[in-house]
Length: 316
Image (cartoon, rainbow, N blue to C red; front, side, top):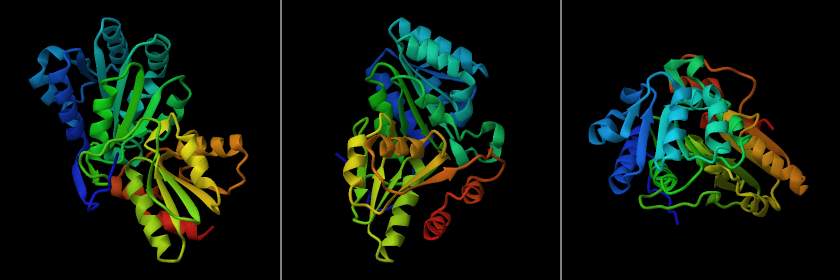
């Protein structure tokens, strides 16, 4: 069960959350190993290397090899966690994830840091707007987008107990708190954070915070809004969507991802499959590449701030 945080201040850096969660699980489970693609400083996985040198591998800038090594470790009874930046954790190694991981029946736990606009000054080459779309096409892959440090901690510890290919994306830096400490979740189940009668907003990841702010602003204008944190994008909580869509005037999805193939597409598929004639607006990135800038500048540039989202919705 989850409860909402008392405040929405920026919390602990998510990279630190991942490291602490992994170190805890590695202390309790000797089968867990960590692999990094020469980003130990950026990810702080050098802390893991110091604490567990015999179960940490820096494969260098050889991401496809990292996935292959992780699959081999899975074959011999280990539970691997791998990290690199978003595009190198997905589109660069898609065939290895597909064949060596999912098709081969192996376990791969993938942490993608700095998705979407959070790539910042690393620019277009390090920006991924398509990672969820790519992985949604692979059978049985679990895809999560962490909203805050509490959820990220839970996701990492939960992945450590499961077999199969699991993927989580999240900013390396701190994001606004959504959940109170000790909150727990369920893979494949969305979280209804706010109840309303008129509209439904479905968000995931860092933009859950913006979704709540948008809903609060709309409430001041007598528009009653549901907000769902769909932190598991695959498998999607179709039952919750159908339940909350009934009677709504419109549905809005908000994501730090392309509107093609991501959360918005997943929700659109449910609407089509269930024959639900409710207008849908997908807010995300449309037919654009990444670019260089601070994360705050890029969030504004790609229309993903609270103010830009509100302006887009009010223009409809």
